[in-house]
Length: 106
Image 1 (spheres, rainbow, N blue to C red):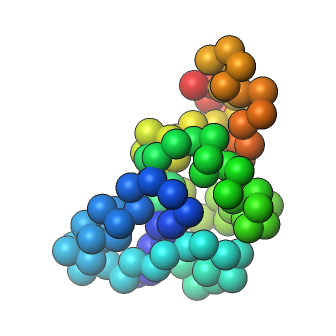
Image 2 (image 1 turned 60 degrees about the vertical axis):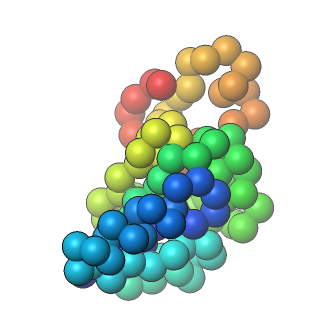
C-alpha cells in the first residue's frame, strides 16, 4: 500500500513516520506527478490558508480534487479545513483556497 502525505507545510513528517512505523510505504506529495500510483492521501494539519496557497502555486488544486473523486483522502485539522466546501470563520474563508470535496462547513 502506498499512501501519500501532502508535504507542502505542516505536520507531514509526523504522518510519514507513523505510516512507516506501520509498515506502509509513505510518499511525500509536493507536485501533481507525486499522486501517481497512490492508494490514498493524507492532508496533515498546519496552517490551512498557507497549505491552500502553496497547493495553488504548485498547481496541485485540480489534481488533488480529481484524486479525491476516486481515492480515499483523510485530512487532519488544517487538512480537513482544506478539504471542506466552506469556511465559516469570518474573513478567513475569503482568500482561502479550498478543495471543496467534503460537503462540510468548518
